[in-house]
Length: 354
Image 1 (cartoon, rainbow, N blue to C red):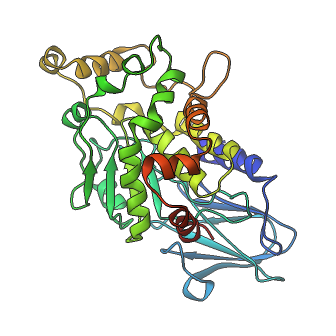
Image 2: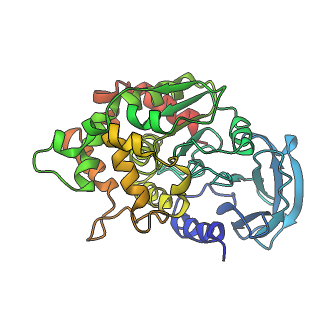
């Protein structure tokens, strides 16, 4: 079974207990088989019409019908290579619709670049596809990768990395608005603000306060509604994981689904493409370069480690614990620390869920 098909099974299990609007197919997921074809799978007792489009918001009338009255729960569509494909399934008896897309962009030399759309919210809606992307760093993309990403129509790329990381691994993406906030990697270490802290769990507890300025940029972009955005750090799992957790929480996605999405980084990271080889001169001059060079030389560096403590807790729980303890909820955190209003939170939920 391919990794993508494994992802489908994991997400089916995740979504199986979620609320579904009456009259819609229960679950729809898109993966890629070993031949590179796109495979749409779904559940539901009624036959569906399957449509494909190059736009995430296309109505069936503006999309191409690829399968009519399909009742076997699976349709395979060759990937033509002509950009991102979005699917709409329409229940043939009720007319109910559900949208789906491939979660991970199939990049040649990218890492962990994925769409956070499709997740169910507590009130039975779903996060819209094609509007919010998360990723690892992009210093080693191929020309084809850059073209695939530019075709998404991103209006902003928010770099969550430190000043040192951005110098060591500049992006290969040009022609997209680029936003970054200067800070030193060493300043975010947990010992700087939490006496006696030493674990990843403790590091995550520092992130909500430390990255509030970055989150303000992200949410300002969402409020402007000018188009899709992408944010990233080096691995696309820690700083990007906390940012995604806050964004999905703001959209009403339950925490168990957020944590499941967080752990997908272990599957979809490709560390070899996140940082170029670091020269001895850089190691000598820059402690952050020395740190990353150590990562590159460590045994098993090409295999991402699970994002869990020795007793099985997700590191992300540290960030949630800090938010709950200091602000009481993610909404309160966004109001008090990031500067949103309650009405703006409602507006974001209306805009980015359906």
